[in-house]
Image (cartoon, rainbow, N blue to C red):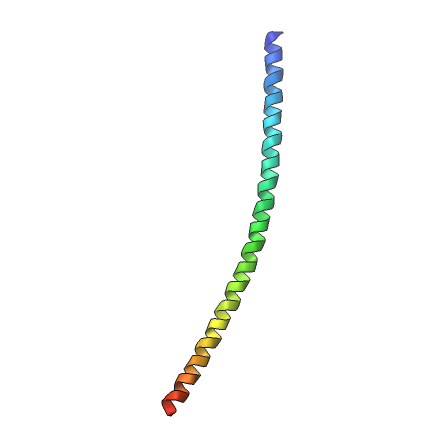
Length: 70
């Protein structure tokens, strides 16, 4: 009977551990999803900034050529 009680306790402990790990897994999945959304926003912002940089570089070329003509 003592062995049976120990096995029951072990199973209960394993079940608690499993539930805890399942909860942590769900929380981590949510965190990953939020981070992926943030990554998408940052990638979009980087693309916008790179486009602005290219525009400014083109404008600078035009200004430099105009200054050379003077």
